[in-house]
Image (cartoon, rainbow, N blue to C red; front, side):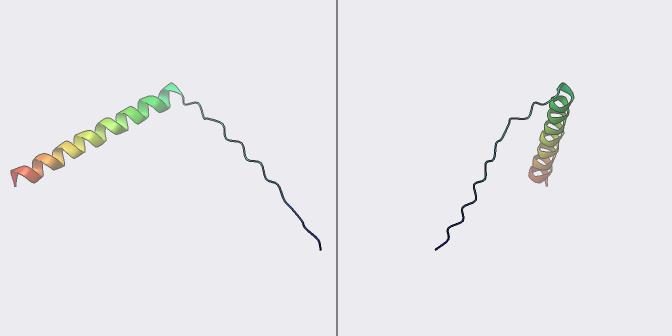
Length: 46
């Protein structure tokens, strides 16, 4: 009887974000929130 075992090691490192990436994400979130507010006001006014 032959038993073959394969071992796999995965290491995960947290990625460091740059200031530009953080600012971009904040802008995207702000635009998303504004669009959701518009949708809500359009929904309730019609």
